[in-house]
Image (cartoon, rainbow, N blue to C red; front, top):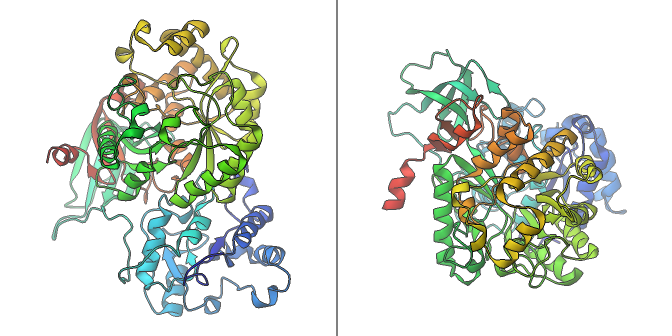
Length: 614
């Protein structure tokens, strides 16, 4: 049950139009099974249930499902409220208006707030509620704006995201913990939003003859208009910008800022056993870790990366950076310390657990700390001597317990797996994504057709962590003994490994497996922060078109991170996370590593240099 004085006010909103993992778009509409599952979960956790007014077209479905999930004897005390009739909503209801939506028009939201509450609605800028990256901030904002009297949260539905709906439940779980300290009629969640100086023109524009919008190339170019931290318009190249609007024309390619789907911000890409290496981070003080994270984020931003997904930190320091949201730092999606077995892969990060109950307790702790997802080590790893790269970590019961506990809290699970056995192990446990997915077997890198088909059928995301800087690969004779043995045994020398993985990724592409690009940034000199472009470019070896490859670090990656309504595309209302590179990406993916200009939430990254030197 929810504790604290706001227990009666925290409400879980459930919407029948949001897809769940594995559903096709055609399954969204009136999906009573998905609604019932979400509502039942909320009821089990002790939260009052209402149905999202954004789904008012389906109030008959909602009425039926509410009767199904409400415990017997309580239904008369919990009458269904027709969400179209704003007079039935309680006075404590808070209306959170995002962008306009044809299923729940902004005008309707505002009318509801004005007539029922007598106040202007709180405006939460930039994206639909289901895609919001920082539910803690939204909870705090709501409570701050209402003086702690918040009731329901009303917002439009995201129809373009990846379908991993967790934010509504997470907000309701956390809203009672946020402590308001002021009152305001309007809350701006992004404290780093750019506010132009008095008298300055608020809008500025970029024109580029070569553009990739996150999904496809635009052969005739675009004009992108920016106001504050948001894209306010996307127009043809020849569009006449408003008088007084500053405009800059670039000869290269304009595209959304990149997303690196696999980073370790606490590590700085040094050789194993030297300061800055991942295995030594557990001995650092929090202040030292935070400085390392800042440096890592700065390197990412300079290279055109505007969002990172951290899949292994120490003492949740990546979450500190996520919640700090400093100007010019990429936004952070964070998993906290990865779960591993005692003495298992990356045990030095502090996530070692044992037994089913130990696994469940650890996942609950991660959820309480506010992670965006959970990572489990399903196999040994190259960087941890003594672990089994060809085998599995955790028993089937332990791995299933991790997935069950995370999914019950609405949080996704990704599994580190180098071996084919570990990939099958993780797939059977019901994880949502596979990291590395090298599929090592007796013959080295494998392409088992049945496993690849099962991964595609289950709707898992694969992040193969391709790419490295060949100039920074140490000679094999300088590698640790356990790595030398693996390289020699399985033919994992860089050129051969790249060739085999290209063949493997071609099979993934043919099977329709969803792929995102992550570098495993920070684990070695050859995988330094800011090099995810190498992972994208390497997909060309696997017969990905240039557009397909670029989506793995833009729109597809954004959707997979739950940020499809926030970033990853050149579209009005999304964050002004922008990158211009020198050259034509439609012809040469290598120019992705030649950034000419970068903006993080509307601010030009060169300012980062002066900030770091101050």
